[in-house]
Image 1 (cartoon, chains in turn brown, yellow):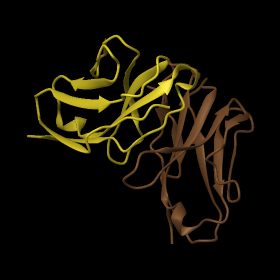
Image 2 (image 1 turned 180 degrees about the vertical axis):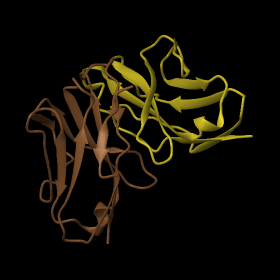
Image 3 (image 1 turned 90 degrees about the horizontal axis):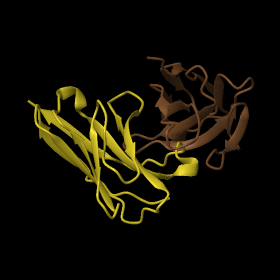
Image 4 (image 1 turned 60 degrees about the vertical axis):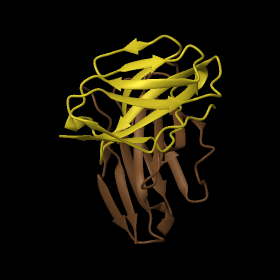
Length: 115
Length: 111
C-alpha cells in the first residue's frame, strides 16, 4: 500500500536555529496537510494545500513558520527561528480530494526536539 | 464544527469486542462521523466513516444512533495490535478531509 513519506524521522535542534521537514505524499494526491501534535494532545492542522496553492494557513504561525509545495507534489515545512515550544511531532497527510470519501493518509511524522 | 466527547481511556481483553463510544450531540445534518486511530509513534490511520447508516469494513463497524447524537466504533475481536488512541471526529461534507482532532480514547488491549 502506498505511503506518505516524511523525513527526517527525528530532529534535535537548538532554539533560534532553522529547521526543515520534508513530505512526499501518495502519488496523485492533490491535497496535502501539515499537522502539529504536542505530546498528549490530538493533531492540530497547520496548513492545507490544494495542488501548489495554500487553501488554509489560518493556524500557521507565519512569523516563524513557512510551508511550500512548489510543484504540487512534495512539500517542505520550515521553522525559523525554532523556539522551545515548537517541540512536537510534525505530521504530513495527503488525500485524493476534499470530499467526505477522501480519507486522510498520514505519514509517521518528524519528532522535533528544541533544546 | 460539532464537538465530540469520548472517554479518556478504556480496557479490553484480547479476543473480545471493543466498543468505543462517542458523543456528538451538536452534530449538523451535513456532518459525517469519522474514526481514526493512532498507534504509538505512528501517524493516525483512517478506520471508517458514516453519515447516518451503520457501516462496516474490514477493520471495524460503526453504529450511529437514529438521532445521530452519538456513535459507537466496534472492533469485533480486539488484538494487542489494536492498542492505540482512537479519535472520533465530525466534519462537514464540504471540508470533510480537514479534520479537527480531540484527545481521543486510549484503548488498552490486554491478554
